[in-house]
Image: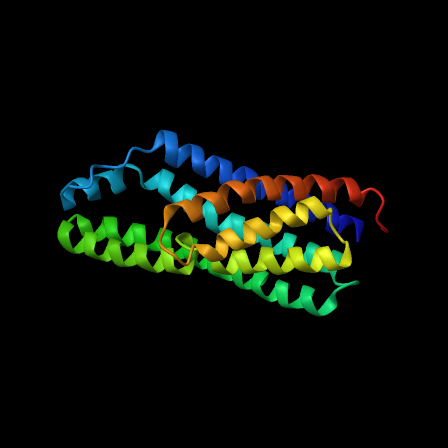
Length: 218
């Protein structure tokens, strides 16, 4: 029990750090081409930054998903004693989010590689394919956070009822969950609120789990 809770706490903190790294790279390092760029210009941009895009897909989706699976299991073990049914339902959405996130990263990387390969002969067709790849990855988990939002929301409700986590942390979780569900509406503000509040939630949760793991049963 102690080892799992410690692993979950470390995973939670790493999740927050992955969010921060992604915000920094996308916000301050990568400069996207103008919206009126030609297909060739967009393709050149993708080709020039293939390594960094591939790294981000691996980090933000695949590694994030692996860490998330550890956290989902650790939280289920912690909360199920007092609210077993609600904890189980929350875990279903948690593991579903794991699958969607990992799938998004794998599709994104394979799609990017194929687009650059095709683009050497037909830039127009390559960018049409890239548009499709983007829609699929965004739909699975890159552009909406509904499944993740439901997981955090149900988890926070269960933890409030069972008093398994700090009350103030659970209230923050309610905000995170509702913001994630709200991303069903195409407004950037909800995605930003979800991302920022979840960074705080992940960090707070991870620190709490690491501290409480010291007193848990081996």
